[in-house]
Length: 370
Image (cartoon, rainbow, N blue to C red):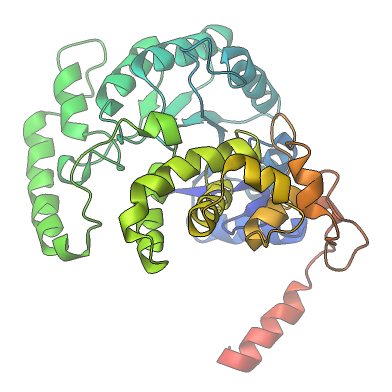
């Protein structure tokens, strides 16, 4: 009786690039047939055309469409720039027009401050009184519980949380804290803290067993509001930096992440776009490049493949376009394989031929057996 939920990266399915349309449709069909119920569909750039494909694929498969509005910036700060309240309301209007079942606000980095949560959820609820709202955040700065309480009071129907032993920092806010904070109020969850604590005892013991594999992060860090690194990427990038010999330069990598984000156009950052920003950040640190040096030397620099493909439009088009002249300089002399184009003009999958799934299946069976 418990619905199963998964993430679907729109036209990127569960991968790091765009796939032919028939691959996404077939994946959703098989996922639904084998037990998946709710599909949280998002796009790493909030690119509507990619979202439409994912929404349609899930709908055709008979799944529940939870379309995500990925959050970055700070709607409570009038000086933050591009990603203001009207931007998000406009995007939600576009999603709602697609006939979605649930709206997700996907705060990948934990940037949704309490006041911003109140403003954003409240505005959406006022305009869409019957649209279910599900809020997801990370607790990197330590404000997760406060933000989820603010979202709930403003009209959110569900918020994501983690068992206490697994909560905090780059994970989700504490479930126990939310249960205790809402007990006896109009937002009472119906759970008791005693019930939650009994389950938490198990996970507390499990975490102790797996402690040797943890990243070493000891506390939250409010500098996430500066670098805006998604919670799921934070520890991964820390490990990757170690592998690249940048162990002692983690603060520099975080600063470079903010610089990379600006160079790429101040974009939505979630897999796979967050990987592009991370690759660019490590590239800046490893080569000791400044922001202006990247722009000036772009035609001669050997950028990571993910960065080149981003500028070619492999992930889609950012909300406010690609930054110039950097984009033109990076893609100069580059060609998309199998075409004479240097860049995709719209949704990448629209220009990709269908994959011969039967032939691919036969190849796999010949190599690995039926």
